Image (tube, rainbow, N blue to C red; front, side):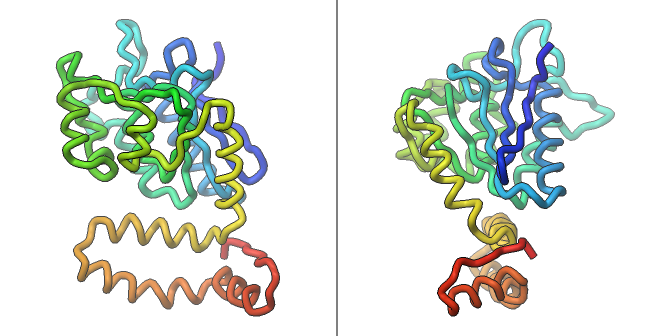
Length: 260
């Protein structure tokens, strides 16, 4: 049997591919924990500058939970001796990840797969994909992914999506701010390479501190966020990357960032 998740280094970028094309890249416990582990190891290693998350084939990025009758690691199952669900573990990992995570949306995105898309930092989608939270059609609501959808989608569009269970287009996702770019399928990887080039040449330290600040301030009041920003400025400016960036600017040369 093939591995359910493929992990591959391509230079400074780690590619994580859900490899269940025959199941439309549906999620089960093994898939989710494999993604979680790959992100954790990339962050700890210090050599990866960005992560790409995608699905195998061209039909689906991720169809959500595997609902097959004989599916292993059923996503709605709860172990009451271990009340925190593995999906929550992955979402927390994505929340705390100090590396940029980019979704390469190569196919349709449904249910839990849409939650993972919303939890990524950026996304590029093929123009023929469709998105949806179809849980209402099977008698449930997208409970586990709702916290991230609340942060990304306009409220009324979110309500419509959750209540009707209907699917929407890539252009809808772009208009709502769910994805950064929509391109013809043949141009998907070229656009991804363009975005990765703009990410991986920047200071890893600035990105790391910036993600930390973004996630922290998002949960703060305006007053709290201003106080947090004020405290972070001297921390940020004292890093080696900040000193190198300033020196490179003054000397009119490319910066050599080390991530320190």
